[in-house]
Image 1 (cartoon, rainbow, N blue to C red):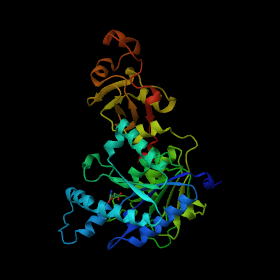
Image 2: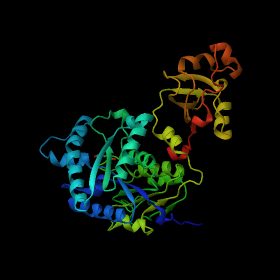
Image 3: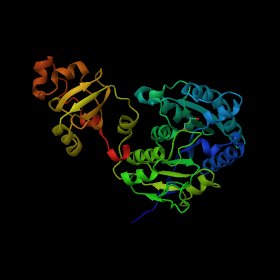
Image 4: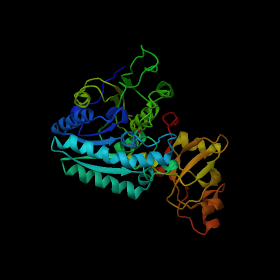
Length: 384
Ligand code: GLU
């Protein structure tokens, strides 16, 4: 099987996620590691690439700074407070490391809510693009841990970084961690674990290999969230590499095509930017429960969702909101779509033929409750 990576000469924009373990040690932020990475970022810039960093490390840095503070039990509130303290140290360390190469930093803190809102998503994108045009600025993104509520958190920077890579329209996503990549078995338990160099598609088998490897004490992600992030980006048509941020000159070596880490092949039939946003960033306001016939039409024939196939609904939503589509008998989520009618109107027309909409509501601006252009059917495997 042909397993070549991409044509690295064509890479113009790289999003690099840097995990807490990559830039922190037991003493907190490891300035030597930051300096080494800053040098590599500079090298990529000199080779004509734009670099966006997604950097973890705020909570870890905050913890070290507040040594005398009683950490246990470590509650969400404490973590948020530590992130507020540590974010300052994190940015000041990056600022210093990159200034040595005459590069400036720009801090962007995002919550899941910011990216769920299409307008804010576009604003964030415009700001990012403006920063990149400024040429000597490296945008550094982290989750705005201090304000994010638990249920609204990305939770891990792998998920955040995959959305940022899509938002930034990157040519490649590099996820730097403290392991060499994804292994066949857990390398922390199995000394003979074999590194997987190439992933054709993020299947159930691939996800099971990620297991719970690398769930860390400093950050929150593990290999599973990294593989899931790579799978999501593959669907977007973007290649990803999970590699070891502690390996010497990892970024330039990867960009020269050296086969380090685990490479994830992009899908040949990518999902567009807007549908990627709908699938992974939009926050559904309710649920539409559909019958098996409708589920089949959506999953197998790429049809729109008509009122006829809807059996029930949950939540209050207005026209234009995102909702999850659920198969009513199994309860399984099939996908996400933007509705043409608000929940009050869907209640009246569900189970009825599209031709009846006019009589029931007194108007009919669309025969579908969700048009297929505004619909994403999940690739279940990638979302396990
Ligand atoms: N945002 C967190 C921090 O800066 C890290 C989350 C993660 O490790 O994925 O500490």
